[in-house]
Length: 92
Image 1 (cartoon, helix red, strand yellow):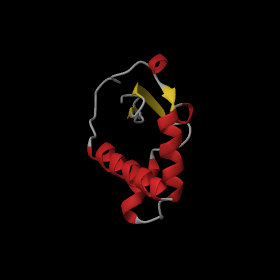
Image 2: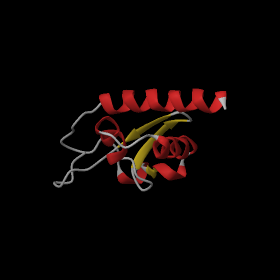
Image 3: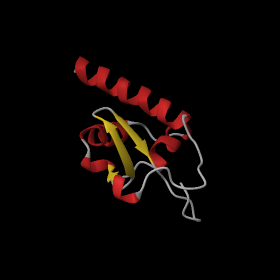
Image 4: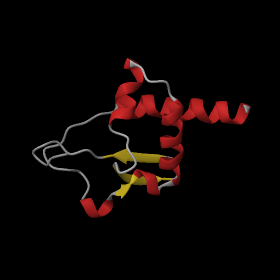
């Protein structure tokens, strides 16, 4: 149980870091062919599982909003993903 709490805190900390690092590009930085669904990565599966355990509140709404099973990410390493979202004009 203690290992789960440590993992949960690590994932929560990662979420805070990821949501605080947001950039807007005129053109998407990664080609669509370079992206993979977050649910097809091990770290993504862990992240989505941890999100299910977060309570619904104003603070967690931003974390959960863009992270769905079909969210597209660039897989940097076993524990680092970059989420690429596109706005209505098609830029990232």
